[in-house]
Length: 242
Image: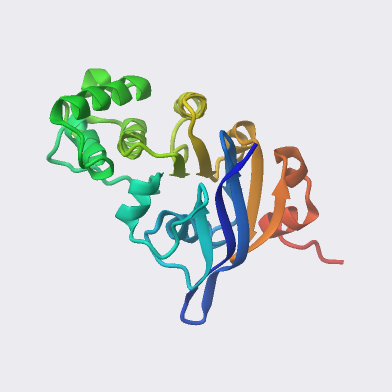
C-alpha cells in the first residue's frame, strides 16, 4: 500500500506558540487515519496546513509525490485535497443542491453545468440528502448540515478527504449513520483523515490512529495499541501522583 499524503517535519508557530511542532505523518491509499488529542493539541492546525488553508512555518507536505505545502487552498483542492470544518457554515441563501454545486465548480471549474448537476445529485444521494436538494440548509438538522459539509467537500473531486469532527454533537443513531457514510466514501476509493472527540466512533472507524499533544506526535499505531499507550492515557487523564 503506497503513501498518498506525506508530511515531514511540519511546524506551525503563532508567535511563541508552537501549535504544530516537528510532526511527521502519512496517509496510505484507501486508509482511514484517526487523528486525536486533547483540546489545543494542534489537530485542526495540522489539518489546515495539510489543506493549504494556512502556510506551514517549516516542513513539507506532499500529495501523490507532488509538493502541496506552500500552495494556496484552492490549488490544494485542485490537486486533490478537500476538508470539512468543525463549525458548519453552509451558504444560507442557497439550496442544498446549490451548496454542493459551489463545491463542484470550485474543485472542477471546467465542468459543464449539466455534468455538475448530475454529479451533485449523485453525491446528495450518497449522503442521504437527495430528497432535500431544493431545501435551504437552515431547514436541516445538525446531522443534515454536517452531511452537507461532507457533500461540498466530496463535490470538489478529492483524492484525500479531511474530516474535522463530523460526528461530534450527534446522537448515537446519527453517529452510526455518519460512521457508515465514511466507510462508504472510503469504498469509493478515497483516503480519509478524521479528527474526532467521540472515541468509540473514531476507534471503530480508523485503520490507524495518530495522537498529538501540545503540538507534537506522541503515539501512532493500531487503535487498540494507541488506546493502551501510557503516554496517550496521561495526555487525556493526567499523571497519577504518588
